[in-house]
Length: 113
Image (cartoon, rainbow, N blue to C red; front, side, top):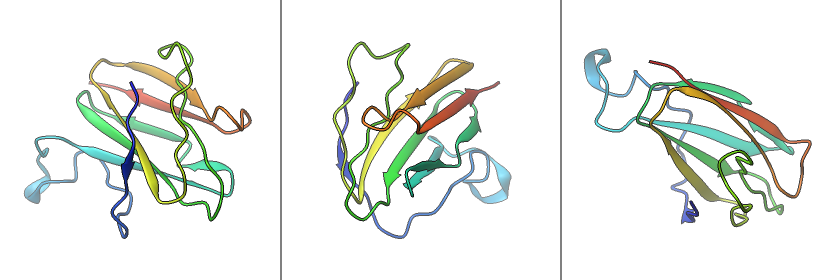
């Protein structure tokens, strides 16, 4: 799954479950992970099924990727500063990922009911 988009500046971390007024779930929850200083922030997110995780590259000059080696046969396209990568998680499980060009950068998406 390859997606490339331009990020809307000023978005912050949105916690799944706190999107709609009154504490209910929005139609599609979005959780944001920032990439800065060669790391994913936060490195681990816990979300409900149906949540979209959006990675935002906040580096000044460096490109990155978000590679789920167990799910993706090939490394996704790189995305550059202020661009995003998104993936929807529908099934419970633990999904580990890394940055292709910087394998020391690692993260985890935990999907729980």
